Image (cartoon, protein in one colour):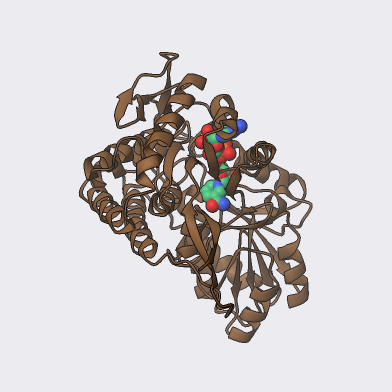
Length: 475
Ligand code: NAD
C-alpha cells in the first residue's frame, strides 16, 4: 500500500516497498511503502498546512467529525478486524474488541474535548486580569508498535485532533495496513486533507527525520524502552515535547488472605492475552508461601485450558508477531531452567502442521524463580510468567519494586486496606486491586521509571496536546 498524505494515496519517493507477513503462515499479505526523507517532509508539510485551519475549527465541529469516524470504524469493524488478525495473528474476537474499544475511545475524547477549559485567577486587582488559555501544540508525530495497532494510535490521534493538532502517524513495520485503513475511514468521515496522514517505513531510517524536523511539535510514542530513550534524547536536543509509553515488567502480589480462584483467573487471563504481547501484562507473580502451591495448581489448570491456533480457529491465543519477539520467550525460559527454575506447563515452541510456519509459543508458567532470572527482571512481551513465593508483605513489595520498570502492578488481598496500602507504595503508573480490568478511557494511563513519561487517556490525554498561554489584561 502507498502512504496516505494530504488526503490522497501517494507513492514513496524511493518507489520501494517492503513485505508484510502473516505470522501464522509466513505468507506475504501486503506491502508497505519504504518512505525516505522527502516523504517525511511531504507528510509534515501537509500536516503543517492543515494545522493552520484545523486549529481554528470550533471544537464542537471537530467532535462531530470524530464521532463520525468512530461510527465508520464500527461499520467497517469486520474488515478492519480481519486485517489486524492477518497482520498480527491475534484471534478475531480480540481484534473486534480492539476496534470497538478504540471507537469508544474516539467518542470519549470527542466529548472530553468539549469540556476543555481555561482559567481566570481571582487576584482582585482593579483593572487587571490574567486569562490562562490552552492552545493546540502543533503537528504531532505518532509512532506506534505492532501489538495494538489501532488502540495505541487512537490513544494519541483522538486526543491530538480534539486539541486542534494535526497528525502524521508512523505505524509498526509488522502491522502498517490497519493504520492505513483507518486513514481511509477518517477521510470518508470528512476530515480535511492533511489533518491525519500516515507514513510507513523503517523506524530506524525515518525516525530521526520525523523527530528533528522543524515542523514537528511533539512526538507521541509507544514502543520499546530502548527505542523510546533514543527518541526522547533526540527530541530533547530539539526541544520537542514527548509522551513516551514504554516497556513494562509488571508484578502481581497474591497475599496470604487472597481469593486464589479470583487471583489465578485474573492473572492467567492477563498474562496470556494477545500472546503476552502487551506492555502492562502480568510478567511475574509473588505468592505468599502458604498459598503458593494452591495458586500454582489453579494457574496451571487454567493455563492448560487455553487453545492456541490461527485467528479464525476459535483459539484463545495466536502466534508471536515475528521471530525477534518470539525469541524473548525462548531465551527467558532457557535462562530460568539453567538457573534452577521449574517449567510447570508450556516452555517449548509448538510444532506440527498447524504451527510449523508460525512463531507459536505456548502459555508457559515457570515456578521457583528468583531475581537472578531474566523472567523476573526483563520484559518478556510473550506468554511466559514467572512465579515466586514470599514470606512477608514487606518482602513482596520490595521484590515488586525491584525493577527498572514501573507501568502497572496488581495486588490480591481480601482486605481492601492491605490492597490500598500496597498500592500506595508500589512504583507503578496504575495498580489494580483484586481483579484486572482493561484500563478505563477516562483515567490516566502511563508509566514511571523506565516505563515512560506522560499520560494518555482522560482529560490528561487531551491536555498533553495543548500548551498553556497566559494573557495579561489591563483595562
Ligand atoms: P519498537 O520500539 O521496536 O517499535 C515501535 C515503533 O517505533 C515502530 O513503529 C518502529 O518502526 C518505531 N521505531 C523504531 N526505531 C525507531 C527510531 N530510531 N526512531 C523512531 N521510531 C522508531 O517496539 P515494538 O517491538 O513494535 O513493540 C514492543 C514494545 O512496545 C515493548 O517494549 C512494549 O512494552 C512496548 N509497548 C508499550 C506500551 C505502553 O503503553 N507503555 C504499549 C504497547 C507496547
